Length: 307
Image 1: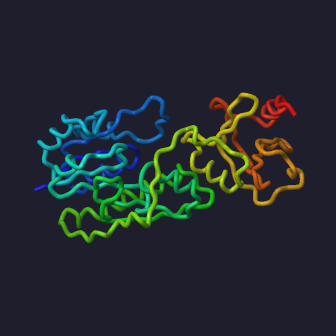
Image 2: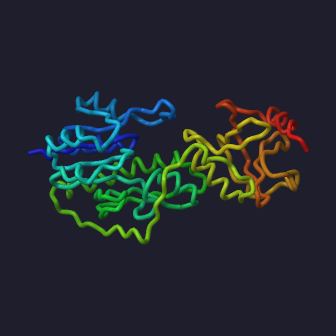
Image 3: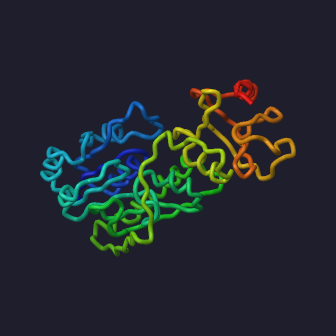
């Protein structure tokens, strides 16, 4: 007899992990997902579309704590509850409806980077490695025992978008490999020692504001962490907002770029960001209102700034 599951899922990880459950023969009785936010750039796959294609019942409640949702899951009485990049915490009363356990797929190597947007935080902090963790859900976020982990490298020039692509594959592999043992109830659980980890909250678009007094490496990490399709790192000049689309860290400052003031500068028809340690970002794509800005256009704006 097939094992049953209720799945809370969103984003690319939600789509891929839901496909893994189906491929492993799990009877997914219900999927709970989110309505897309019209104010958010939707660059990822749709769990709702997958459910429509596969004929799976799905709902998009505004709250995971609603009595109606609890009653629906309780009536199903699934063997498992899974959460794959679902954005809301699930109450313990709901988790208790799963006869064989409730498990979450988190985008970091727990206990590091518990909480929100772990990929972006890992890149922002200059980490060289991250990964995914399948763990038991508990009252605290990302605090339950660990079932499985898979690590991926963060290369020096990787953006959060690129790292997220690696984690999507790692999530699929992790779930695929652990499911046979999980279904057989033959799992070796590992402790999730929160005292050795870290917790981070969500990020807002305004958190991408650039403080040019910081070092080039810190600002390059900020750019990589929030580069498009995320909202991007941005600065203001003469009342206009400029967002970095693409950039790289300049290893050696050329003579023509020495002693420049902090912030955006145009030298030899190239755009640079001058940082607090006098090092540079070479900005190969600068955007204003979503449109590319040429070096000549930027220079005209810079000239409007009083001496």
